Length: 284
Image 1 (cartoon, rainbow, N blue to C red):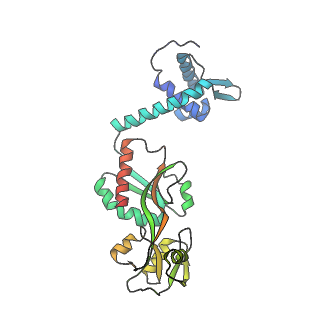
Image 2 (cartoon, rainbow, N blue to C red):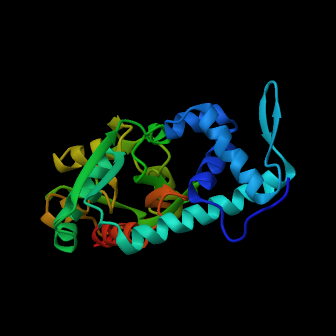
Image 3 (cartoon, rainbow, N blue to C red):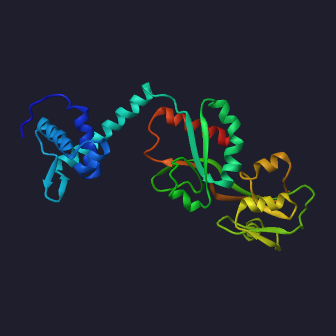
């Protein structure tokens, strides 16, 4: 093929080439753009003639990128992404909706208290929440902005810390040390780890055991005993006096509560600024 043009090829040709290279075929690219396969083939043929290089190998079983096509594809993708991002920054409308997913307990304890602050920062933005029953369900959740519990490392996701997990003995007013100790099963350190790290002596667990911090804290609010409670999740109860911290050592952990999103999802300055404001409210 002989190159017969200078400058840049038409954007339409580049977009079709990027889709065909990304999706691995002309028919898939045609479906994405609502074109016929012949129209996609024609555009890519025009691009190849313009460049003077073959970008695809055509075979009976389909098409595959040539060496030149494999080299050109990431350059086109980066350029299209930069053009989209900069166009959004310059001319796009500010986001009008923020949707976040998380465990029901995290939505209740972290998001709901943050809403008044976020409303002051972004009065035009509507907040929507999606609750999941189990932490493992977040991997299949379609809502891309999520609150997660852990150490801040998830494959393919960026994460910003909201609060470190700190566990402290807490109880309802009038409940003193010596009351039953509410057992909490799960990945968090429990009373036995607290005793080992704080050196406070043996403890006797109560006859009730929960697999949810939310339920264990609720039991403590009702005066059923003392919980080794999460400071971030019980902050509202502590602030309003429904629970109080006992004068006993706290237990620092390596975990925390994080706002996370796919690493390639937040591209424009406006999206980043929206998430920054939401983080500010969550941390407040």
